[in-house]
Length: 105
Image (cartoon, helix red, strand yellow):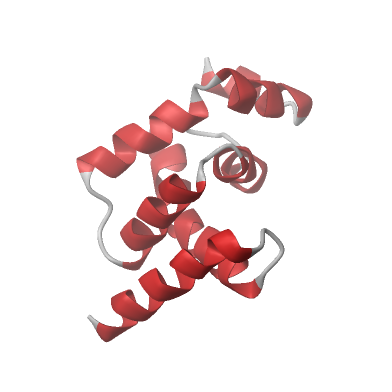
């Protein structure tokens, strides 16, 4: 539980600078939630570029939520959030640029 509290504290600091260490830690932890969902929902999708598109198009509060899920357990609400972010126009544009969109059909 202490680790989760520390992670939340670091994630809250993420708003202090996009290039900061806390932001990177939160994004890395969020990948622990995003990657398994993408792998299950979109089999065969290249995970690293797809998760980058999802995380880069998430708001700071969404990254914090996903980072918490990545540190504990991914709940259905987290899965729904990941799918919601993945289907946003900006995320789809990112996926198209990376050549990933055909995997999502």
